[in-house]
Amino acid sequence: GESVGLHLPTLSVQEGDNSIINCAYSNSASDYFIWYKQESGKGPQFIIDIRSNMDKRQGQRVTVLLNKTVKHLSLQIAATQPGDSAVYFCAENISGYSTLTFGKGTMLLVSP
Amino acid sequence: DADVTQTPRNRITKTGKRIMLECSQTKGHDRMYWYRQDPGLGLQLIYYSFDVKDINKGEISDGYSVSRQAQAKFSLSLESAIPNQTALYFCATSDSQGITGANVLTFGAGSRLTVL
Image (cartoon, rainbow over all chains, first blue to last red; front, top):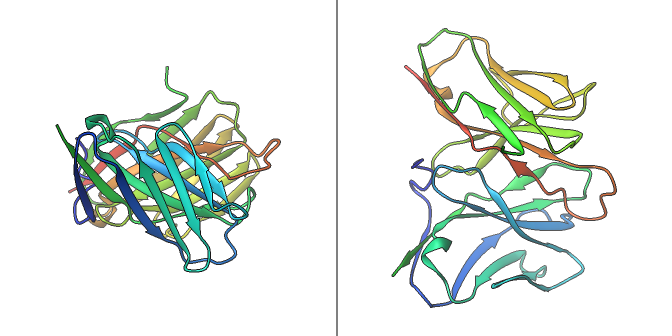
């Protein structure tokens, strides 16, 4: 697969554990935050987004938490599965009319 | 078929050669983007286009050019490739119509370019 994970922070977990991936963002004017998952050899895929007027949003097995005070975003994955192994990126967006700024990514490795 | 198709998927070329990476989409989105990905550096925006007549430079446009031939097609060119342009390139699309939320991108599978 593509070596997009070189030099990335890595989180290693056991199958069935909960995973927490963190992201610090830079622009206090950002209004939307998005998480993407990139599997080896593929392009990033949208997971979930959250608007700045929320502090929590839940999806299927995933929860995103937003702390605007410290400009921190986290993605929680419940009951992590081997298929969750990938690089996860956060991105910030000032509005729907602007481009995204991506973080550097975190590699999640899930052991059976 | 994929919503966003990139060709070629892999290309090896020599310094000084002209290279074109092509992107086509079937999502009907008006916005298209080209990103570059290097290990450990995340995704960097090269160029973007909000409609057929609109082309904008991103954060790393030097050494690259683009053409928006139609709403569904957006190509990236390297006029004279150099080794530090070796990277993974992604095309992406998004839809401005009815946007009330985030600018969610749909990515292609990527084009791996190696410049020797």
